[in-house]
Image (cartoon, rainbow, N blue to C red; front, side, top):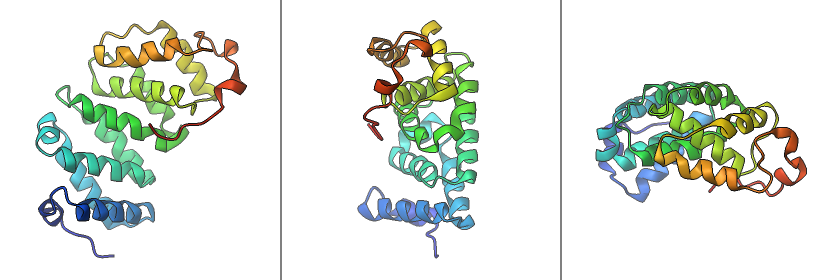
Length: 197
């Protein structure tokens, strides 16, 4: 499959053609096309700084969505490395987007979420972990060991960042939340799975 060069994609701006090309590249990456993965990783490298997101929000948003949506193992590793490289100047909207997409990886991302949750509150991976875990809980996609970890961790968690406080409060306000997995009505908890906000 012939892939466009990054400069050709940039020339498309925020057009419908650009988004269709990004979808095509993501699908190619999902099927194991190494050139598509190379291209996505190159594009992702251009979105490391807050200034990159501020100047090229459409480019960066489409890129991280394409990488994660590909569902590839290489894409997952690239996403993890990318998140761990983020600086504190990254816009909150970018953190929200990443947090909404990470559940596509399912349980394979659980070890990283637990590790990032232990980081200081001001680090982007910590904020992403808190939001992703809260989203998984609220969307009824969490179970097993990750659910046990989350219920205990969030019960003792004192959010120091106003941007995560709302989600944490929302989790704690849910009927059935008690801070302990043994007190959760699991049948009710697993009803009506929500795939995406």
